[in-house]
Image (tube, rainbow, N blue to C red; front, side, top):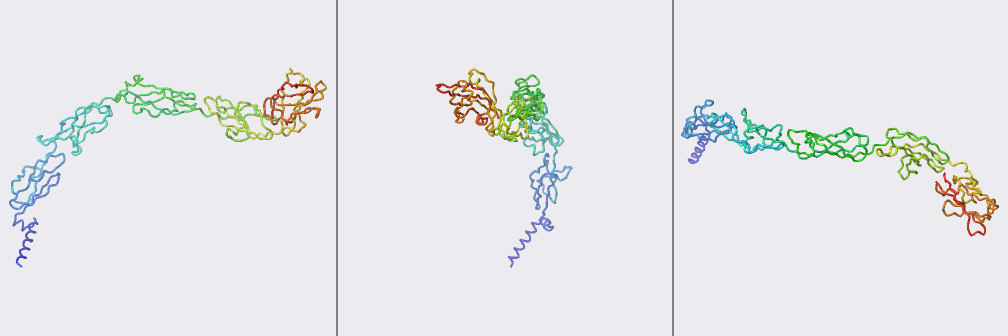
Length: 490
C-alpha cells in the first residue's frame, strides 16, 4: 500500500512540473518563461527555465532584406541588449532588432555587356551589395538570388534585346526605393546579307499585278510591293519587278545585301496569268434550205474580248460531251445535215490567246424535213463522146425516201448507139470505188440508162467524181467518160 502511494505522489508532482503556469510549481521550483518577438521575422519558440537556468540563444530569425542585429529587452528603442549569460528571475519577452537597408550598390557588372540586336540578356556575373544601417554591415547578392530577395533587374536575365531600346542603356536594379545601374549595354545592328523575296499568287488575264498577292519572304525585315501594280500582263508565266523596302534601319544593317541601292532592293518575281472567261454571245441569225443550215448573221460578243465566234450543230439540246457533238467547232457558216432529224445550232466565242471559249448559246430545235422531189440531171451524148470535154460541176441530191422516178442521171442508150456506139452495157461508179451489182445496166434491158438519186445514199457527203464506163461490142477496150465532178449533199 505504501509503494502505491509513493507512485501516485511521483506522478502528481511530475504533472505539476509540466504545468509551467502552476503557481505552486512556479513558487516551489522558480519556473520562468522567456518569449521571443521577432518583429516581423520568422517565428522563434519560447523557452521555460528553472531557477538558475540561462536563456539559450535561439537561431537568428530571418526577415527579407533586413539584417538581424540581436535580442533586446526594450522594443523600438533597443538600448538594452540581452546578455545570454544572465539568469532571468521572471517571465520576460525579448525583441528582435533589425537593421534596414540603407543603400544598394553594384558590386560587379555582368560578364557580357556587348550584344547583337535580337540576342538575349545574360546577367551572369552581376552582383549587388546591400548596405544596412550605418553602412558597417553589407551583404553581396548574386543575380541568381534576386528573385528570393525581391530584387528586380530591368531588362531581366533572358530578355530579348532591341538595339533601338537597349543600346547605350544600363541594366537597372531596383529594391524597394533603391535603384542602381550597371555599365551601359552595347547592342549592335544585325548585318543582313540576303533577302528572301515572296511568292506571287496566280491571276487571270484582265487583272492587274495588284491582284496577285505576295506571301512569304523576309517580311520581318521589311515590306514587299509590285513596282508597277497597275500593269495588266498577258497570259503565260512571266516575271515582274518587286520592291523590298527596309522596315527597320535602326536595328538592321542592309548595306551588304546584293542589289542594295542605298534605300531599296528590286528583284523579279514569277507570276502565272491564266486565260480569262470568254465572252457570252448573242443569238445568230440562220436559215435552213433543204439539208443545209446556213448562218446569215453571226453571233455578236456581249463583252469586248475581241474573240472570234464559232459554231457547231448537234442532235442534243445541251452541252453534250465532245464525242456526242456531230460536228467539230468551226468558223463555217453552213452545215450539211441529214433529213428526218431535229438539230440544234450551237454558238460561242472562240478560245483565243487571252480568253477561254465562252459559254454556249443553243438554238431551239431545227427540224430537217425530206424534200418532195429531186431534179434530174442529164448527161448529153456529146459530153460522153468528147474525152476532152470539161463539164461544169453538178450537184446530186440523195434521199432514201425519194420516189424511184426521180433521177440523178439519165442517158438515152438509143442515142448512143445511133451515133456509132454498139453498147453492150454501161457501168457507173463514184470515183474509183468498186461498182456495185446494181450499177451495171445491160443495153438489152433498157433503152435509157438511169441512176436514181436514192442510189447515192450509201456514199459520203462532199465532193466526188462520177465515172461512166461504156462497153462496146467487139471492142477489146472500153470507152470511159471523163470523170465528171459533182457534189453529194443531203
